[in-house]
Length: 228
Image (cartoon, rainbow, N blue to C red):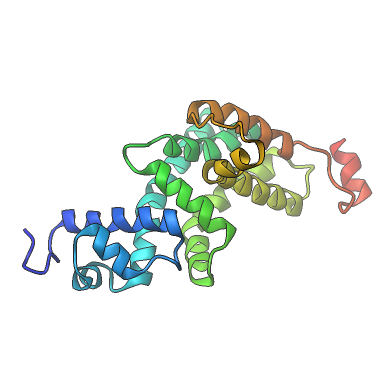
């Protein structure tokens, strides 16, 4: 039950998180004030401080509540593939789908807030502050390390540094595809297909093409020959 300050109860906490998530996605982290958050959530500042200790704590919880579930789903998908493979190296396409396809599934969740959160993630990747960057790196560390380990096994002839670069590019492409569709409409004036079910096969084809592409000139000639 809420007290007179609206501090108690999981429903108050959820209302604050939902309001902050929506405003962060709309305006960015720095441009969203605590006054905006409390106004949309219908609470006072004391309620936010009670539940989260301030804006930094609120930002962390906005990301953590979705990332924990997203990474759980990713690791469950990866473990299912590993069990099926029985110790053999996984196909790169299946690794990519387990990691990025899971995010696209969340992006398709319009009613549960998944789509809004992935839009926020896309916005954050393009200009995170140091606090958010460090926090996201910590939250992603275990999950990303396990997927990279499988990509190293799946692509033994590709230098690890190159796999890291390509994973970085895939993260950026996925974030932009989910959160930056308005830019394509701005450029073309014709883009209006926002259906996540149609986005997934297009994006997966693009990601796999980049992962399997020829190695660039910066990679040693010997390594390029081994992949050819």
